[in-house]
Every structure is written in structure tokens, then in C-alpha cells.
Length: 97
View 1 (cartoon, rainbow, N blue to C red):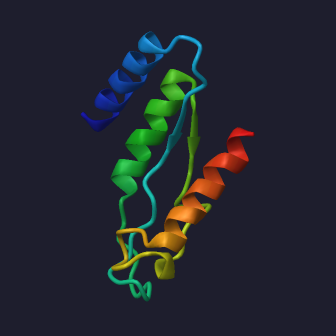
View 2: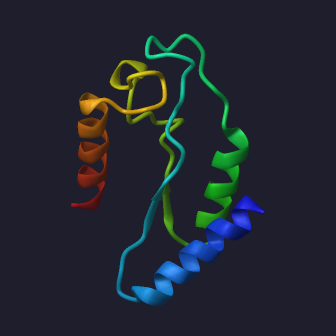
């Protein structure tokens, strides 16, 4: 179901922006706290999003295997602090230029 919804979103975005270059950033890592004690597995979500990107022929950035943020760049293991936001922006800009 998630893959189908993701694909539908890509199709709709492509239809409304036919000249756009589309990227999808997969699920960011999540930890049980900002110290990074235990990673929370979201493999089912990552797999569905990656499959949707592949099926629709767009680039999916794997931010779990190639982490963009660290636990210390979150306030609680999930929500980004300023450092995490900056890291995310730097990551995206570097790949789009």
C-alpha cells in the first residue's frame, strides 16, 4: 500500500510539473535518543519508497545506508536540531548542483 501511494504521488508530481527533475529522500535514520543508543528500524518504509522510486524512474537518496545526519543532530533521536537541518540542506544542495 505504501509503495502504491508513493508511486501515485510521484505520478501526480510529474504531471503537475512535467519539466521538474524529481528526487526522493528516503526515510532519515531514527534513534531512541539523541545519543544514538538504539537505531529504530524502518526497513519496511525504506523498501517501499525505494521500490516506488525505481518503478517511476526517479533518484531515491538512501539516507539510512549513507547517513545524512547523526543522532547528535537531533533533539531526541528523531527531530532535527539546527545542525541536523543544516546537514540536510547541505546534502540536498550538493546533489542538485
